[in-house]
Image 1 (cartoon, rainbow, N blue to C red):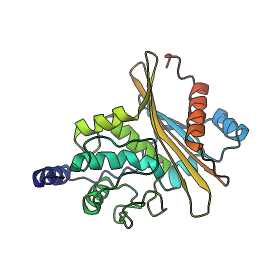
Image 2: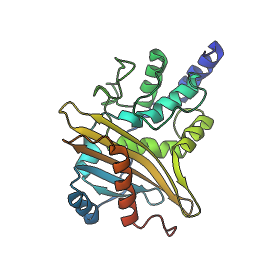
Image 3: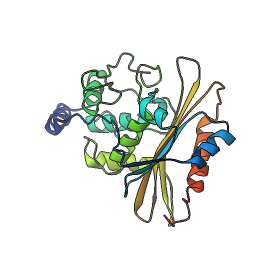
Image 4: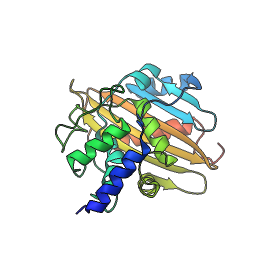
Length: 253
């Protein structure tokens, strides 16, 4: 049960930050549309976009820039990142829920809405904020949508503890996302899959890879007319193949 004091602390913190985070876009210092990425998508019959950002230089390597920047889709299981943060901040969760599924535990609607408004998550613009209708499925029912660009912005801000949640909770969620951690690299990510209004299957992998204390943030977004039950594992393999093609996993970046 959430104590009254916990609620007050959470809301005071929410008011104190007095900002609209609007997980909007990352700043494009330099963008390279990589032919190797284009070839990878063609060879593997993938429809979608991929982007990776070098945090040190602000440089983006992108396939399908227009889709990455301008097209929005249901977040599916990737919304679990935000949901875990809200749940921890408001005291509804005592630990990070499992990230292995697109089915997520429920949040109290009013509190969740307040945090969604603060984040600007799924907002079309400064004035049109997303409003939660069905509390048990809004991240899957196509009412909530987000661009790949905004997804990348979210994971970057989480990595550096820059979201409007207590830093301890951001660190807890960040650690829960780490899938591989060794002397050469650290790889963290969250997957998500869902069905669009047109019947196509959407897929996401949002995360980071760190080598030599240098972080890179990436997002893979795919769309297919043929549904695959094991899509999350397939997409993770694609991400690893793409990253390997970019020279990662050797500890030399």
